[in-house]
Length: 558
Image (tube, rainbow, N blue to C red; front, side, top):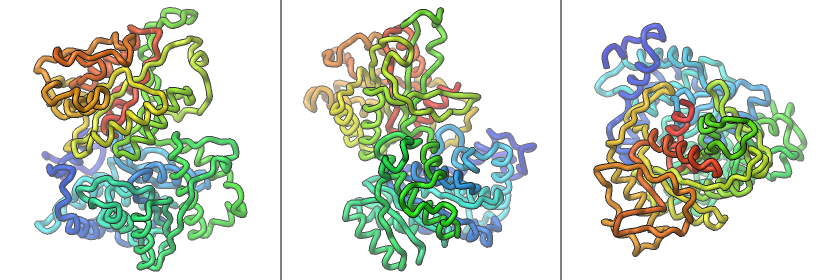
C-alpha cells in the first residue's frame, strides 16, 4: 500500500489515498462468512488500549441501539431530539451512501474532511506501529468503530448514539461496557447466515448489547423474540420496557421528519430512549411535561430528523433544461426518484406502502439539492397541477438490485403485491448492478466507471423472478431469459404502453422488465425517457440495496 503507514495528516495523504488505505482493511471473504467472530471481537479491547482510549471510552454517555429494522431511523430521531435539547451530539451509523464521513455526525453534520483525515491517520499510525502476529490490523468495521470512539472522545460530545453494525453481542460497538441506555428496534429474519435461523437466535444476538443494571427499551415484538429479550434482561437485572409507537396526535400537528407509517414505531422508541438518557444524566427536570405532551425540543427533533436514502424523494432538475419558455406547459421532462434502501421482506413492505402513498396522493415534495447538500424537504400537500401547472400522467418504474445473499423471491413479491394492493403498478422494472463493491471504499468524488461489460447473471435471476410474478410461474422458464453478449437499451416508448401488454417469450421480448448492465447508462436512459415523453411524470422507485441507493444519489449529484 505504498506510504500508507506513514501518513500523518492531510498535508501528506489525499482523501483518495485515505480511502485506499481504508479499503485495504476489507477482508476478501463473502458477506455471509461469520468465521471466528468471537476471536475478532476480543481484539477490539486490545485495539482500544493501543489507541489509548481505555480510560476515556467509559466516560462517553452512550445510547446503544441494535435491531433488524429501524436502527438508523431510531438513532437519527434520538440524535435530533437531544441536539434540539441543547446537547453536543455524536452519531455513528452505517452504512454510508456516498462518502464514509456520513457515518460520523457531530451536532447533526458530517465530520469535516480535515478532522476526518486527522483522526483517521492518528488511529491508523498507532495501530500500524503495534501490529504483531497476534494483533493484525482491524477489519473495516472494527476500524470504523474505533474511529467513531476516537472522534467522539476528541470532539467532547455530550452524548454518543451508536448504531450496531451486525447482531449485537459480538459487534465492534459492543466494547462499550456501560452505556446509559440500550434500545432494540423491530426484529426480523435477516443476516440468518451469521445470526441464526430463528427469531429467538437473532433476538439472543441482539440482546447481547444489554449490560448489567443498564435500562433497556424495545418495541412490540413477536413473542419468540420478546421472551428472549426479557429473559436476557432478567439475567442482567436490567429493566426492559416496551416503548409503544408514537401517537401522531402527540406531535401537536407536526409531521415526522422521516416518512412512512413505520417511523412512528422508531420515533416512539427514540422518545423513550431520550427520556431515559435525560433522566440518568440528571437533565430530566429541564424537559418535564408531566408525561402529557412532548417537550418542544422533542417535537422539533422529531420533525427535523433527516436520513438520506430512507424514504427520500429527489426531483431530477437536469431533465428540465430543455424547457424553452416558462409559459409553455408539458414541454419538458419530469423525473422523480423515490429512494429507499429496503432489503428485507419487512422493510420492503414498508417501502412499498410509503411509495404507493407518495405517488398516489403526491403527498410529499422535495426541494432537491442546495450547494451540493441534500435539503430535507418540507412536507406539503399538492395535487398534480400544483407541481408545475400541468396535468401530467404518472408512470412508475422500478430500479432494483440486491445482494446475492438476499432472497429475491421474498423481496420482489412483497414489493409487487403491496404496491398492487394500493393500485400502483410498474410500467417497467429495470435490474442493474450497483457501482459500489464490497471490497472498495469510495468517496463522494471518486471516479464513476461506465462499464457495460459487467456480469449480469444475478440481474438475470432477479428479472426471471419478476417476470414470474407478472406472468405466472409456468410462463417463464430458466431458458426464456438469457443474458446476451450484445447489449441494447430498451425502448423508451414504454410510457405509452399498457401494463397488460403481452410479452413475446419466443423472441425474448419482455415489456415488463429489462437488464441494463451500467447504472450511469440507466440514469441516462431514464432522463431520455422523461425528456422524450414530456406529458408524463416518470416516478422511479430505487430500492433493494443501500449501495444502489447511494450510487444513484452520487450520480444525481454529479
